Image (cartoon, rainbow, N blue to C red; front, side, top):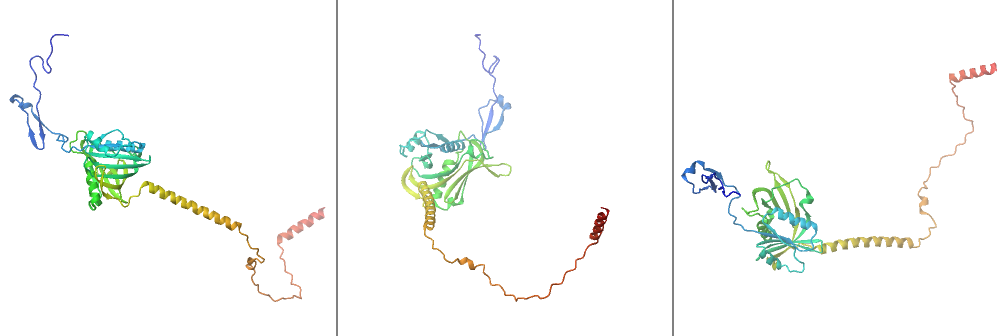
Length: 346
């Protein structure tokens, strides 16, 4: 190793001055202290769109309880991929109460939460809450289709900000207006978020049909602004809206909601009624076969084909019928002559 060390950016004569850049932010120029000798090397570069102050510090915690299946796990991963402002956590134990979720969100420094609760390994419930003061809503999740399952042709940039499209019915009823505000705060990516991209290339749609909320994700095509579905897709069946976070007084209860246990019970009762009906039909058939049939002395169907005939007068012929004249063909005569000549030769 030589004792001499070179200075970075110079040949020993002195440090070389680098080019100074002038950034433009929001229409105002921000200049640096530039010496007079470097004014000639100055050039302006517009500031990128993503450069700005991150003011809306919305953080959403997305996690679940134990006992979820693979489809729910993939749906959680899709939501985390679509929303760059989300955080993940380990699965919560079933024995813990839901108020523990507020403490988990406080530890993770999150003010919104999407919690998936699995029951009986077949029913999935989703909680959407504003931590820690509320309100919160509980949904039954149905018809889940993940990104890997759908394989749609749509695509969007990872981390890009979405547009939120809501059905006009969200503004007509107060409980839907409350859910609209919750969905807006949770699913919208904050502006200038560090992990977000400064592009808008997809839409989250929330449609109300059959007293349920249908979620879809579409790509916006630049050429003609048409929509192509990306995924995932699922249906939210509202159960209750609570004043607090994961509990508290009930603000709204859905009168059209039918629990999955009751739905399965109705299906079982319908199938049992069908089986009972079949058994009753079989028993009736057996009873008819076992009954003694009365002996019929006279067949009623004998007179069906007995039709009265018209009586014709009896005519007696005393003279023989006139014989018919049979016309013989010429060919028969020729053949007869040939036969006679053959007999003579013999």
